[in-house]
Image 1: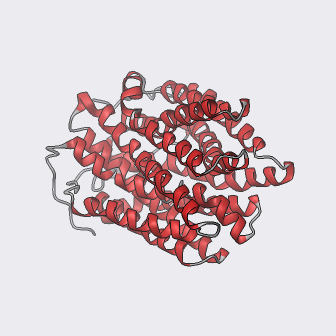
Image 2: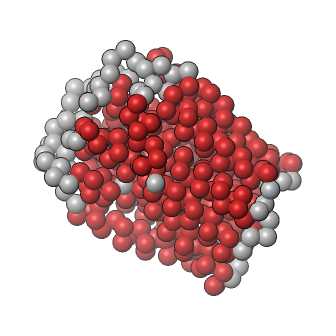
Image 3: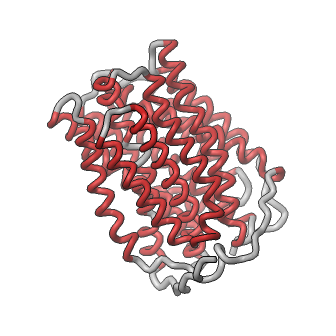
Length: 398
């Protein structure tokens, strides 16, 4: 049995949640999404097909799925803060591995490890953020949104670094980008190691509560479609921009706009999330996300691509935040890790299938436009599915 973690009064809940958000900043914002920035150079230097390139995100998503399946047990055994820190450290190790070899098997293992660590950090971090947010019920939705804006910092940071490192060092310099991102992640990890984010007896120590799938099946389907739809956009959009003639500045600007958009998420969506504890909030946000993903299909103009990045980014992280809000509204605190993990598993399965399937379609059809078509369509159908989710009988919101 683990030793109980010390109770925290959460004197500065916003500050603590921002520190906890460094886990998905590293695990998702950098560990997962920065791959899209180096994918074109890796594909050229290592001779990959789009299917092989997509596989790297598929194996990452497979690790994320396994990590989500293990997350509740890890939280129960070691506690929330240990799961957050341990998962994030695993992500940093994976970044270093990506920099050491061009071997397909080594890189596959690194991407798998990144998924495992990111899921553990995300599920535990989401439950921990929900508990901290609960200490101020009137601001809970806003505080919780801060956690899900965290990956935006990772996207912004990698967007400011990767394209220009590749431009400065030339073709085949993808491994230098991975080393640079590893060092950046180590710096970001320091506050997470030092901050008093321990939680007393509560979520991790409470009697287990069952999470029934049946009442939320349509919601899980919607989230599944979101996972498959967003990953196609995030995996191949940089390659799409490069193929359209966009250089380092264009790629950086596009990626940074997605990251910057995440920072306004708490202000844009907090009222919507507070008003509805069924699936309508998620459906609205998913619909906006689908619109953002569809915009590049209308043309390659700078204004259109910039609008796509901003619309997609402002909704992307809010979708994930809305699912945690849904769990917080509809289940008791003891069920939060299990509920978040169940949603993450649905998300993880779809991410596992999405990249390699869309990569295969792109190889067969010869154009990345088909990947974006599939992405937007799945997001739109996911929004429709989520809209049918009703509020559960018992509400646990404050």
